[in-house]
Image (cartoon, rainbow, N blue to C red; front, side):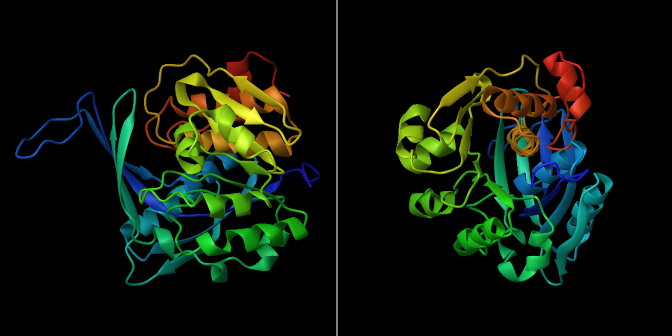
Amino acid sequence: MGLGKEKPVVVVAGELNVDIIVSGTDVIPEWNREKIVDGFDIVLGSSSAITASALSSLGLDVRFVSVVGADDFGRFCLSELQRLGVNTDHVAVLPEVQTGVTLSFTTPSDRGLITYPGSIPLLTPDYIPDALIQAADHLHFGSYYLQNGMRPHWKELFGKAHGFGVSTSFDTGWDVRGQWDAAGIRALLAVTDLFIPSEEEALHMFEQDSVEAVFGQLAAAPGLIAVKQGSKGASLRSPDGSCVSASPYPVTPVDTTGAGDCFNAGMIRGYLQGLTGRELLEFANACGALSTQGLGGTGHLPTEAAVAALQGRPLQ
């Protein structure tokens, strides 16, 4: 439906957790040793939630569907989403469940993550009413491999969304079990408009040694495939088989947490705006670059004005 409305509606169905960020130049723990680090923060985590927050910052009407525990971390997640302009009417709060937690050991150049799943795998189709999808322009989810309760159901849900005229997208995240479920991903791609993995994820998923080989293997996929390549930028394969790449924007990162999720938001926003090819990829790259300028996934969310300034063009 695109921009037929003043504010396109995006439904994000995903996991919720807090990120506990330990930051500095030397943050790797050592057995029987104690270290002093530079920073410690508790922020909103989860790929889906960060993407939702960035979409809201980019001016979209965002409605989040998820499950949290009836605990302090769950209340924190809800309050942060609401503060960032994301509707949480469809987030279920479950008693006797702990909200998920990710420990992020973050340096200026990279990060390592340890996650306690808690409520993360508990979202199921029962929490996603048809009326919510029908009201949307776009449906997105993140963390394919962590959302155990939804993994068998995404294809049916995306097919239903397409039946309602709603476009779809997803990001896989890392498979901590190392199984990668290539068959499940391929099946889902048949009803996906935007597939947005990282390079490392895509190479593991499809057992290839280059992004070009991945694109070749997925030639039958009907949607766009955007691969995030970190310091190399990103590459995009369009349904007609054409491929373009775009270099990253030259910024000095404070924290790379959430950069890929903000890239996702840029892809969705640009797609709904009618952008294609390199212009779409560069818009998403700008969103990812801007997110690295603050701590945590929502510490420096992209805006339309900030993207225009980074790209050196007037705000549309």
